[in-house]
Structures are given as structure tokens and as C-alpha cells.
Image 1: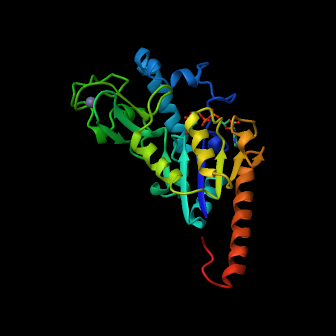
Image 2: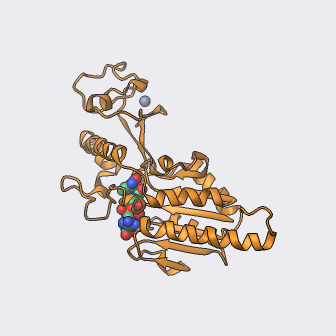
Image 3: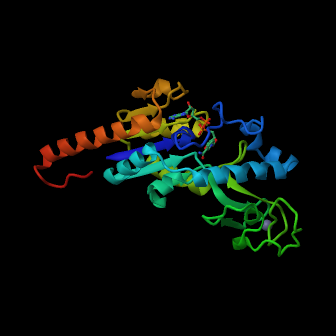
Length: 271
Ligand code: NAD
Ligand code: ZN
């Protein structure tokens, strides 16, 4: 079985991480769609960093939910599997999905990178004191003449401002990540494509979902609301992901296992 799963903020909503467009998305009355931009960082980097530090904190204290766990079960059952997540949180990984089965197409919130040169580092898991954010030991801040009271980390190599390692609205995707997804999508038709908890407003998400499904694969959308992809779905599930996905995944595994058992009469039952 060949499976592509595309997820967005909705898959982490039941872990307590707000979506951008939902009612809890606003932060101090500010619209995340405006904060997650290069323009916001250029005009007020301290404010943008403060928002990201709070989000990192919130993600650290959150736990993967039943939807993340169901995706892991699906990944071990399927012979070929790729998750493309727009989420910058680490909940898919913490649920147990190996890195090689996943592409974080919009980056990783725990990466801090230079806004000018190539320097980047992943933040330590246990970083929870504000002071540590400003001077992460892994990057050796202070080496580039950083002032003690600066709120924003500076690059120890070139002195430019450090920024979160995420793709902001209006920025290019990482071409290496696009290549991984294109290889998978171009590598054969998927039996099942899941689109879970995303408004699907980015053209590449819609394009990958439709191409991967081909003429005959299933395209299953799980989202309480309608999206631009709904019209192309072969199955639409208007429920929260953590409620619906475990049931759907277990059904697929049960059906596929029993039909394979019947075919193979006790032979290899995984595909
Ligand atoms: P979005 O905020 O635009 O939309 C979330 C979607 O999830 C909506 O369509 C909504 O109807 C649906 N949804 C809400 N609760 C759900 C649930 N319990 N189960 C299933 N679906 C549910 O998110 P987006 O489409 O991912 O795009 C916004 C951008 O912001 C993306 O880049 C995204 O990664 C980023 N973002 C990431 C996180 C995160 O990493 N957890 C959180 C917020 C935003
Ligand atoms: Zn630099």
C-alpha cells in the first residue's frame, strides 16, 4: 500500500496548539498571518521572537494526540509512506514517526537560523528559561559582541539577527524538501492520500494531493470545515482529526490485512 499524508495545523489543534485561522489563533490581538512574515520580522523582530518563544513553550508542553499516533500506525503498515506536514511543531516526531518518513515543508520551530548566512542550530529539548532562548549554548551567543540585554539572538558568525527556522508567508520553500515530495508523488500512484486539518490554501498542497491520488486512489479529507480540496475528495470526514483518524486508520488496516490474508493464505500480510 502506498500512502501520502498531508497535515496542517488542525492535526495539532487537539493537542492544544492553536491553528492560525481559528478563533484562538490571534496573539495579543495580532493576526498570526501578519506576524509570520519577513515584513513583521524586519519591522519588529523582538515582537516576532516573543511570539515564537511563547509558541515553542506551548509546543514543548503539548503532547501528541490520537491523530498523530494513528498516522504512525499507518506508516508502519504501509509499504511506501510519506508525511508532508505544514506544521512546524514536533508532535509527529514525538508520536514516533521517523524523520525519513516525513517532510516538514514549512520548517521546524525549534531551529534557529541566521537571517543572512547559512548558520543554523536546533534548540535543546529542555530549553525553558527565557535567558536560554537569548543565549542558547549551542550557538555560543555573546561571541559576536551580543549585548547582555538584547532580546534577539545574533549570529556568532556574521552578527546578523537570528530568526526561527520556519518558512514565513511569502517565502520560498526549501528546494531539497520539494524534491523529496516530488520524488514520492512522481514515484507511483498512491492508494490513499489523506489531507488532514489544513485549509489547503497553498497551491502545492492541493497539487500534490491530486497528483498523488491519480485516477483511482482514495483522497480522504479530514476537517470539520470545507476547503478548496473538498470537491476533489473521494471521502470527506467532517470531524476533528483525533476522533476520526484512529477509526479510519484501524479500519483500513483491518480490511487490508484480512483481504491480504485471504489472498496469501497465511503469507506475508503487510503491504
Ligand atoms: P490553518 O490554521 O490555516 O487551518 C487549520 C485547519 O484545520 C482549518 O481548515 C480547520 O478547519 C482545521 N481544523 C481545526 N481543528 C481541527 C481538528 N481538530 N481536526 C481536523 N481539522 C481541524 O492551518 P494550515 O492550513 O496548516 O496553514 C497555516 C500555516 O500556519 C501553515 O504553515 C501551518 O503549518 C502553520 N501553523 C502551524 C502550527 C503548528 O505547527 N502546530 C500551528 C498553527 C499554524
Ligand atoms: Zn550569520
